[in-house]
Image: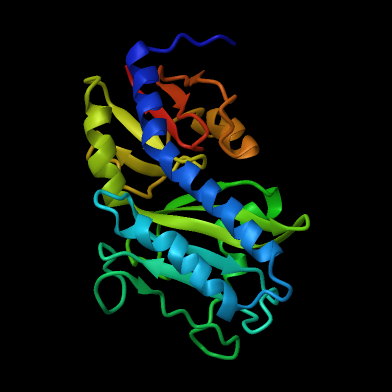
Length: 261
């Protein structure tokens, strides 16, 4: 069915995509560089690979105006010779998680016998890319591992010889996204809500719609199904809900704009 979409809604969706696209491009570049580095290592180890990751993500994390608050590499269990479970994850000075200030490495528990250990392969930001082999946007969710606040995490598989050996990705505070995106949403003068592929609210011009809550509108789950199935493919089409709202995909971000005329 052809859906007539308000020009303002299309423009907003495009601007949302353009805000996040540079982060996607950066992560894709990191993946390419890390895959090349790992492929050149006879026996990849945390000792040899961690400095490569730190050098790659450090400057972007500390760049003025950066949206990202954490970034790094998470290894597939058993891949690194000297670290069966390993997160080489760095936090920016804007990240308020844990102790310390400025750019710093996340102090993650990597001993499976410890009570504080957490198997990251069961978390969405690992589980979905491992299944699909493609980039995934997780959230918004409260990230108790790296930010302790509402967060969006973007991860993409890193592969060597056709086998996934880990993930590279980044965290963005939802509050930072809101500062960038709310003025854009408000420009149309219509109620606008940005949701992920599961219908969870990222931000909204309606203060009653809380970040992280499910947006409950008739037909929304069905309208978002193509985003979930195609992992945010740009070919997903706009859809009209029974109540008249229009759902517009925001490029290949796996986010969608719910525009209520």
